[in-house]
Length: 113
Length: 113
Image (cartoon, rainbow over all chains, first blue to last red; front, side):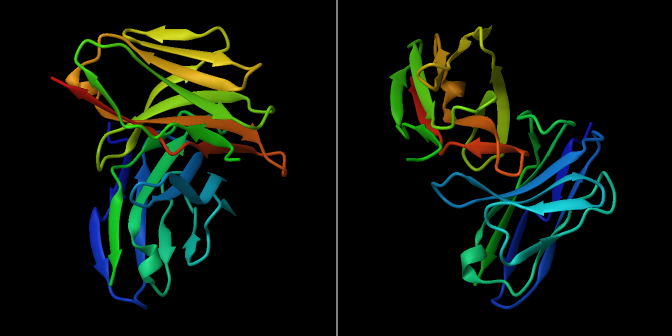
């Protein structure tokens, strides 16, 4: 059982470049989330989705976009990368109801130089 | 005041010790509570949910005190493998009548031989 799979695991971007972080889950979860975690800091919610076709902003959405065309996939798009977006990005999924039992991917470490 | 507060530690304890962490929350409308563990440079993983009556899972015991608005995690007979950061998570209703997860910054535990 793969759970939540994120790609790539590591990426270095130049300022102004764009990229997409991929996230897919095979647990048929309605809820999916994107978080970022800076060193020594807590998780900050970027975007979340309660089902296919429905997305909403979290605490720190600026500079990012998401889409949810299927239940399984929830890609995160970074437009015009900035050094402030250097972080570890975690995708997570959860069962219906928005409970706190989340399953996380292994994370994507992004560095913007 | 932060919505969810944890003592960042680090807590340094010898193997076999009992250690307890507290987490305080400010929103009295908080519904559900969870403890996650996060190993260094890894994704968070659900350790246990916290029920009103308290719950135990092996060496781990979680308690909820709604009157004082805190949850606790007790680890008995600490193992080296318990070394990690322990994250407190609270689920609340937000202004839009949606559920929201609030993450603490975590408490770092180092179990020493």
